[in-house]
Image (cartoon, rainbow, N blue to C red; front, top):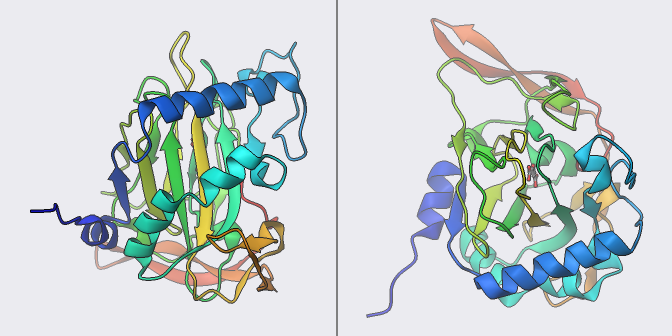
Length: 279
Ligand SMILES: O=C(O)CCC(=O)C(=O)O
């Protein structure tokens, strides 16, 4: 009898699901070679911090690439791959639209990314976004694997505070209430983690002496969305055709943790102005 997937149940309960070997290890290795080659060949629009081969900061020697699908066919084909589409259609109940690709190299010594929620940046309305995060290397605690807070997808977008930029290359983070903890997501090349736009997630520095922690990431929006932040246009259907949606503005309400009778609850207090791009 064919195995029945319980991906949707897991996704609804915890805000994420890992699909093991959705891509083969050989495919992951080919992607890894492809992006190392692209990185060595030049500088691209949107490189985080720009390439500086003489820098002491490993992230400047291997800056993150963004929106590669706009100029690289390999990235475009991956972003709309039928395997990613099938999983997300199952999770969301309808096909998503594709809005972003990113490649994190995260070499040895590279800083991580402080805890955040993707919906803070994408501002999808109505609904939310979903990420497909594919490991290109073995990802574990030593090389700074992704960390998530299970169940946090039920929280609204939280107001941010200053992050520790010795640990994170981004400068904002979200506070966790007492009792909430991150869990490390251990993955092998070709495994894909799908996670909800409000799931709190991030990563710690790569503390290994010589290992990369490369990841190929796609961001998508649920197909009922009518608006998304300007940085994510043009938007594509999963067959590659463009789809027109409106531009959402910043200034959304955000939540802070308050103590009610010894229990932490989120209260919507204000308006968060965001730069409009996914960091
Ligand atoms: O890969 C990481 O370290 C962080 C990635 C991330 O936060 C994201 O894809 O939204």
